[in-house]
Amino acid sequence: MLTLRQIRQNPEAVKAGLLKKYFGQPELVDVIIGLDEQRKKLQLESDNLQAKINSASKEIGLLMGKGQKKEAEQKKQEVASYKAALQPLAEQLANREQELHQELVRLPNLPAAEVPHGKTAADNVVVREGGNKPSLAADAVPHWDLIKKYQLVDFETGAKITGSGFPLYKEKGAKLQRALVQYFLDFNTTSGYTEYLPPLLVNEASAYGTGQLPDKEGQMYHMPLDNLYLIPTSEVPVTNIYRDEIVPLASLPIRMTAFSACFRREAGSFGADVRGLNRVHQFDKVEIVQIVDPEKSYAVLEEMVAHVEQLLKSLELPYRILRLCGGDMSFASALTYDFEVYSAAQQKWLEVSSVSNFESFQANRLKLRFKDEKGKSQLAHTLNGSSLALPRIMASLLENNQQADGIKLPACLHSYMGTDKIS
Image (cartoon, rainbow, N blue to C red; front, side, top):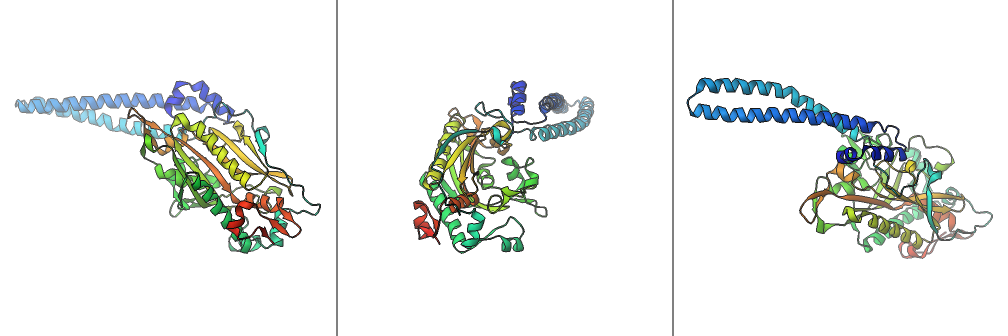
C-alpha cells in the first residue's frame, strides 16, 4: 500500500507512475487527498473538543476542592455537551478513515524508474539469454505426449478426482517432482536461506498483507465458512511471518525459502497455452523471500536474480531474463524480472520465475518495520522470487532432453533421481 506521505508529497509523480502501470483511475489520487483533508479536519475538531473536555474536567476537580459545587455542576453540564458533540464527530472520523483506507488499498505500487514503458508482454525488455537451445529430432513431440508415453502424469484421473487443471503425478513423474523440490530447497538453503514449510491456507489479513486482496480476490480459492484462502504461492504465508513485527536492523536481511503447493483459479484461461503442464490450477513451487534494509533492496534484487539464473544454468536449460514493462507487472511490484525457459518441442518461451522488489508496499500493509541505527522505526522492503515453479520446468526438461531411448536428466538431478534418464 502506498503511504499518504508518498501521495501528498508529489501527487503528480504518483499519477504518472499509475499511468505507467496502466492503472485506469489516476484521479483516485485526488480523491484520496480530499478524503485525507477531511480526515485531518475532523481529527483537529475532535482533538480540540477532547482538549476542552480534559480542561473542563480538571476545573471540576478544582471547583469541588474549593467547595464551589454550583460552578462545578455547570462545568459538568459543559463537559456533557462537549461529549455529546464528540460522539457524532468520532463516528464521522471513523467513517472517513475507513473510506480513505478503502481507496488507498485500490492503488497499485508505483513502478521503479528502470521499469520500461509498455502495456503488454510484447513490450517487456530482454535483459540477457543463456544456455543453448537444443536441436531436436524431426519426430520430437511436446511434453504432453511424453507424459503419456512414460506415464508420468495422469490428467484424466486428476480431473475425475478434482477437475480439469489438477494433475495427478505418478511413478517417475512423482519422483521427478520430489527430486526437483528437494534440489531447489538444497540449492537455496546452501545459499543461506532458512527453510520453512508453511500452512496452505491463510486468513484474510495475510492475503491482504502481501497484496493478493482485494486485487486478486477472483483468482484465489476461498473457503467462505472459515473465511480462509488457499495460497497462490508460499510468498503469502512466509512474508506474513513478520506481519505486525518490528525487527532489529542487525537481523536484516531475513532470507527465507519454502516449498508449497500453490492454487490459482486462472479464470478465463483457455486455448493452446493451457495444454499439459503449461497452465494448471494446482502446482508445486519453491519460493525465496527476503526482508531487507530499504537502502540495499535493489542490490538484493540483483543478487536474487543471479541466484535464480544460476539455478537454471545448473538445470542446463536455455533461458532468458526479461524486465517487465509497466503494464505487465503485478499489482504489488515496483520492479520485476521474469525468467523464461525455452520449450523446444513447442518452440516457445515458458515463464518459470518472477523475481520482484515490492519496496515498502507490502511492508506498509503488513506493518512490518525495522529500527534504524538511530532507533527510529521504518518500513522494511520485501522481495520474493520463484525458485522455481515446477510444471513448466518439468515440461521443458522433458521436451528439451527427449531422446530415442528416454529423457536425459541434467547432472544436478542424478543423485536425487537415482538415475541419469527417465525411460
